[in-house]
Image (cartoon, rainbow, N blue to C red):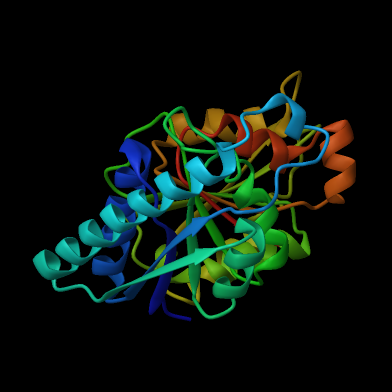
Length: 274
């Protein structure tokens, strides 16, 4: 597998610029083309909310969003000219999740931001990464809002539990893994074990030219997500690779789970597959 086309969310603000930087850097590293997708979510305001908002709120928002989109287009074209990386800018209006799902079907990886962020114009993009990984059929690379991303994929930690989702995530991450300086496969369990659960997948990666060490940590009083994030800091990881929504989305939303916790608390880029 190779990365030849990258789809990323193009939006305004500092967070949008940081995401754009990461997407262009990733494209340059893999000789890929970019698709920059700007979406104005024009879904109607719920009827029960209408009485409490100004009458022209929707129209005002759409006008401002369209004007901002033009600025984004100019920025993307200037970046394309400066870098020589082919970047196609697309503008759509509609439900942001439906639009991204449709366009994600024709790319290798989708690059998104963590959530709404303080400078996001609307909240429609909240939890987009967690939703899209279920519908896109493609890996989703989610970048944190509260951290500067200078490089992605030099030191990679893989969260491994032997699931179908984790297996797919490792396979989807191969183009990044083969270029990494260091890779660690980490399993999290509730007790010590003589057999390291990640040793087999590390051996599989070795056949692809990836030198990966396998390790196991005990969950103890912390959650699996907390244990993974702690190990990321200890390992100096700049990317965490995990399977997403091993339990049903409803189960994790109500009762909590690793995917939900990681997306909420992530401090480094997170590559998810389902």
